Amino acid sequence: MGFQCLKIESKDPRLDGIDSLSGTEIPLHYVCRLSTHAIHLVVFHERSGNYLWHGHLRLKGHIDRKFVPFRKLHFGRYPGAFDRPELQQVAVDGLEVLIPKNPVHFLEEIPHSRFIECRYKEARAFFQQYLDDNTVEAMSFRKSAKELLQLAARTLKKLGVRFWLSSGTCLGTVLITLYLLSCHFIPFSFRDECLILES
Image (tube, rainbow, N blue to C red; front, side):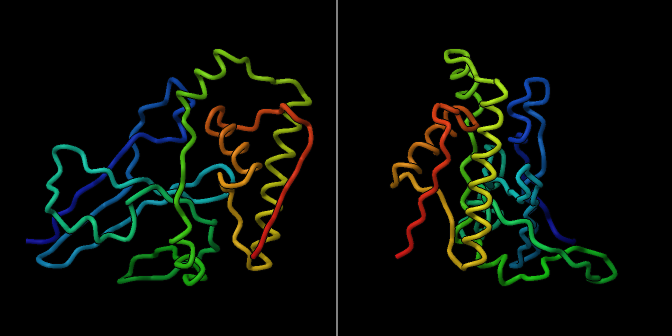
């Protein structure tokens, strides 16, 4: 007898904002076992913003919780986001697969990869109460704010400084709160600010 496998699926969060498509299931993890050996295949999905995302390994009621020691798996305790790596094609047992060109960088990202998804239902409720500003100025502000954060992250990455938004700073608290409320930037102030502290 060969490997026994579990397929873990969940709703695609990329479609949560689209009523007609929300609820579409996508594969997140495959866990296979043979005797005392286990293989954990994590499915990475492309997200807008040029990064890769993997989902939470959530065990549903019918899944055998003793199938493998799930707590020992390196991925799946929470969703993760990773820089889009440059890939190279290699052959493994005659099968062509893509792997990161710089696997060390990929592995270094794991401890800092925790991803918090926008709460789309709350955002819809927020915009039912407070109308969304879809003026040209507001759209331009959102685009500029996103570009500024991406530029800051890229620049700091080149300098070897990890970039993140923290709720421990005033700017971080405002941005995180607004993002979780609305799933994008609310243009209540037309100023772009960025604060970077390195100890």
